Length: 454
Image (cartoon, rainbow, N blue to C red; front, top):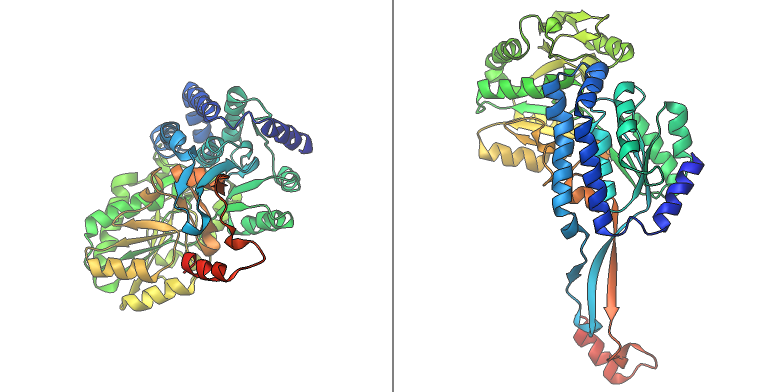
């Protein structure tokens, strides 16, 4: 590991990655290689997570290609020095902000969207001028393998390289000295990563998760809400960090919503989803058994079936759920939809605010005052009004968490800035030098300093 990091640091120190043209060509090369291996990527995602080709392209390959296209188009503008106003007291000078790469960065990605969540931050890191070590998850070996093939074909190892393996390799990498660490994964592992980063005061971005609430009030368009909630909740078998974790529903429309959710689940996944070829699977037996332990069969009104051999759990809806139930004690990260009703929205918001800050929040409401109230009162990473999960599918907004759901953000300009240190520079001219700041101080200096600095 040390040899890999030393070679990348030497390559960065050579200045090769600094020209914007070099970065653009690197991103174009990456895009070309990804397109060449499109079918291999889809096959790997099918093997690891049972993803259909359509879902794999929509949520992974297509997202990566979109970020590449956006960054190639805008990188020259992002990398430019930005001139800012200079105080009169600093006359004559020019003040500007210069984006500069951190250096050698470590990108650690998870298994649930193994291609997109490894390559998207890499795109931003390359655009900002860094070298990078990518560490994909051991839980998605087929995708990790194709990522390694693509990176090896697109880049020299001293520029970008992939390290595969499990905990031992993770530990060895975290023991190395990087200039920046970008981690996507669980809260528990995120704390461990942050602990190691703190030893060297290494700057870090953490993309974590949490129990993301989905509020449905009495003004919501119930049929449309059900359609969009089912899509966001059961996509990738619920193994999405921004999936709506649980529903908080106004009791006045609860029965209508539950009926529509049941209808919509059958429409999207069929009457026997375990035989639906386009429905994915749980990543491994450990997670499969954990999810089964969260299902209370007495509260299931839809689904609940499972197939351990196939690692599949049908889209499951649970009602009459309380805050004390097992399913409400941890992030679900699977195809289980608990529904809790409320009488008073303020009580529901108080519950949300009493919990760790979620990565996402969703509100289905046609009431503008309600929308403003929820967005103002609740702290969360990002979210949607009258939809789910689509807020992360744009390069024009940053994506990230807050509190226990993470820190920092990326995508587009935000991603470029994440992997850049923005140097503040004053270029002071030499043809004029105001004497007032130098000792010995004169009486006129006192008047001038009050004139300039007020």
